[in-house]
Length: 61
Image (cartoon, rainbow, N blue to C red; front, side):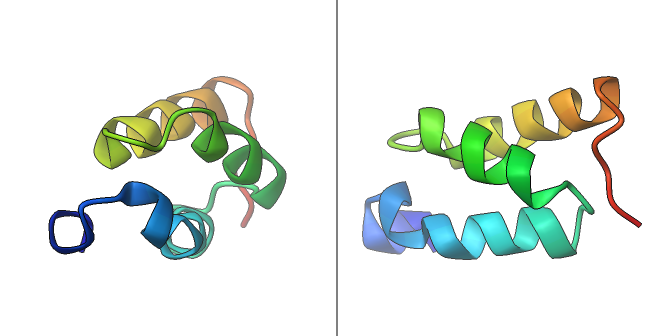
């Protein structure tokens, strides 16, 4: 999706939704951390968000 739109900002709502629903990251963390640097590296942003969520125990069940 990112490659076809050439902008990760355009799919930020989708990325946030997937990070919350599929990976179980709390919405407060994903809405903050994914907004920091989503211009070029969506995968890296999601992975770093998952790492922070794991270290801070911010997964929702």
